[in-house]
Image 1: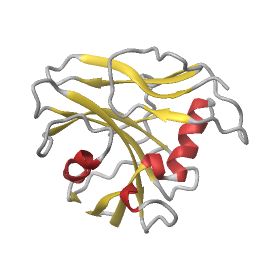
Image 2: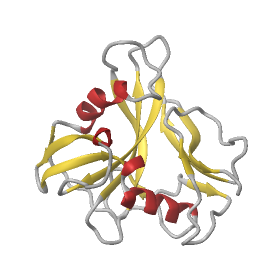
Image 3: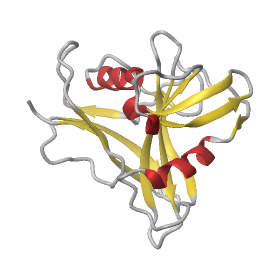
Image 4: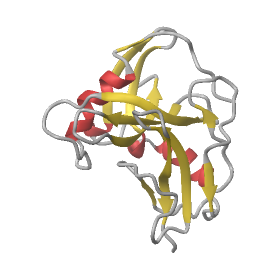
Length: 194
């Protein structure tokens, strides 16, 4: 089960994502820096205990309409070799664990392996900010093929409040909070039928 450290992280996750997000091809915000607020998410466990895995929802409130983004994160104690340079969101000093390399989870093999395990029903979503606590609000609709038959998973980067996705045989559905405090649920990741 995920252990959450009550400590500091400098720069913060939101500060790291604020500088990284506008450089992404799927960013739909206006020119200039986004104004991000944490809106939700969940964690997964790395079976080897080496990589922190978080699926964070941030909402950009800088524009005329808020936009929710899903940013899967891999927290590592060392550089991840073999990934594109743009996969690195940044580095931060963690008050307990020291320097952490924070990667876009879409490029982190451990994050992707655990996402696939979740879609197969072989991993359990954990609460985003409470240690040793399951998150029953994260659900998988359908079942992905077994190990060794890894399907292509599409991560929903710009979230919308809809629990269905056309052409998806398996959907990972979870929730987040809108800036006005109302709840939203949508597809975080999907697998197309083979």
